Each structure stands twice: as structure tokens, then as C-alpha cells.
Length: 130
Image (cartoon, rainbow, N blue to C red; front, side):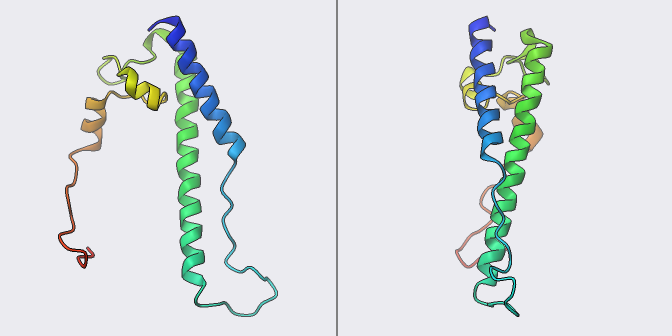
């Protein structure tokens, strides 16, 4: 890979790292807004639990991406010639894929092999809740 491309990907990774770190964790809304209140409002509880689950999921996802960004920066520093090559088959990862996710380690084919076959349409009807 060309030095200019490596520099561009390093900057993308550093920008992504800065964005994630500066954003911090998404605040998880407490179960009770008024700590002096006795009991809870049963109508608000499901919404509060759903908001907490969404915030927690987003925080885990951001932490995962940050970990992958840091690993990509370490790979770039350790062996710049290997950056942009799939860690499984050592074939070049497409520039389009690297532009979208500069922290990826696998090419599309190896990623599909790792993820396994796609599950297609588990639901047949709107009322089918499996």
C-alpha cells in the first residue's frame, strides 16, 4: 500500500478514535427520576428499561469499535506493509471496505466465512413472534 494511503487510513483511525473518546459513554437513565418517591410509575417502567437497554447496547458497541480501532493502529505501527491485507488469506482488502471501516481485519470473503451463512426470513407473518 502506498505511503499516502497509509497516512490517510492512520488519520481516519485517529479521527474515529477521537470521536469515540470525546463522545464518552451514553448516559443510562436511572430507574427512578425522583429518589425520594416511594414505589414506581408502572407506565414508565417499560420505557425506562428499554432506554437503559439501548444505551447499554450502544456503549458496548462503541467500546467494541474503539478496541478494533486501537488494534488497527497497533497493526499499522507494527507492520505497515501488512496493513490493508486480510489477516486470514493475506489478500488485499478492498479500498471501499477500508474507507468505510478502516479497522477491519478480514476481506469480505473471509468475513462471510467467519460469520457463517445468512439467516433468511425467520418470520412469515407480522403476528409470527418466534
